[in-house]
Length: 379
Image (cartoon, rainbow, N blue to C red; front, side, top):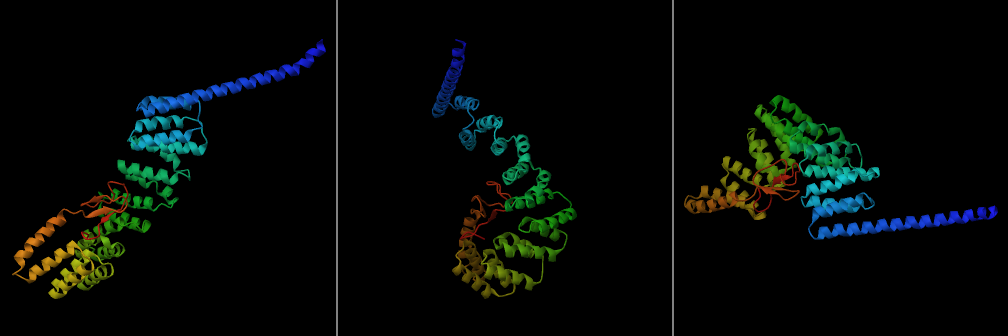
């Protein structure tokens, strides 16, 4: 009889394993059913515009199932795009508390930082972004948000402390941002101190326009016209579209007529700049070459239809014909009124239009993208 009991032990063990397995399967099936039910309930709340209830229902699922992270990230990003930052923050904070693989956890940390920044919680965003600049995958993205954050709070010094981290990236926009931030920091500085900083910025960021522009401004103020003119000329030959703004400043350098004529001639004939055409015609007038000035404007207008060239030609002919002056005065006034209503600058990145120049685009927050417009109303 005792031997029979020993023979039944394996049978009992097998039966226990089988029943336990069925019990586990049953529990898993029950859990999945609950998840499906809760998920369906949450989606139903979303569809009926009961978003707060939906979020509570869906967040509850995170305690049960963390395999659908991408779905939650998509939902949080949807809320953020709609401006519902508090809802996005709640989802990302819940995800941030989960024990996830390092890469996934860092991505969620980055998304949560974006939520905080969008909601104006800059200190929280900064706290999450700073560690991410040490991670190669997210370094550039984290730096762009940190720089934008420091621009919003005018913490120029903190932004400039990111220089070494920026050098580890290939981002031209970040370097351009640091060059302009360096200029912003010197706006209230003494001229000599500012001049030294601008020289350093010009050497460090040769593709940035503003450091050269600011250095030329200081040189002109310190009665160094040759240096100022050299800087203005370099900018104009690289960015001839800036002629309308920079030529009046370069003219203040009062250099010999030959140097001025060469610059205007190059900008006019090689780069076909409207402001250079008009300035060159004015220079010819000052030299007593009235017909040459009128002929230049007429030829350029035929090659390149432009309202400002047309206005300059009207003013030129008005001076040469007293009989037609009264009629031309009326036409010139109409053209001037038309031009006074036109935008002067446009952001090449986002298309933002304005009559005032900004180094930082108010719309897309990119540096040195707001430039003089071209075309029939361009300068």
